[in-house]
Length: 138
Image 1: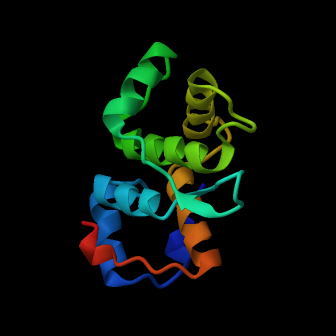
Image 2 (image 1 turned 180 degrees about the vertical axis):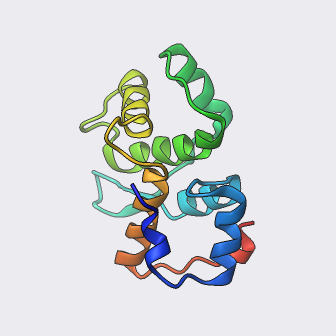
């Protein structure tokens, strides 16, 4: 599938980010994106920031569940793990094994495309009016 971003005029700092990392998260962008994630407190209904999962915490979970991740997908996987924690944990995903399978299914989706996790993040930012200062994330 063609890179759909090439259909648009993109800022030079974003273009520079893409030249280094392609359509994938690096550590800084992943940290930034995860810092915005919240989970509803079921007792109060209030939204609260999640305590982020680290790559050091995620790797053994994926290894234990025999999920292989390409080197340029590690921060995509970490973004997904934290998204699971914020949006799906305790509901449709109840344990680490199912979280690992979800990550594997998304990253290795046979009819997916390169950069699917990154593209989803960009779409979410756009829909919510989020601003990304790309020059600070390189």
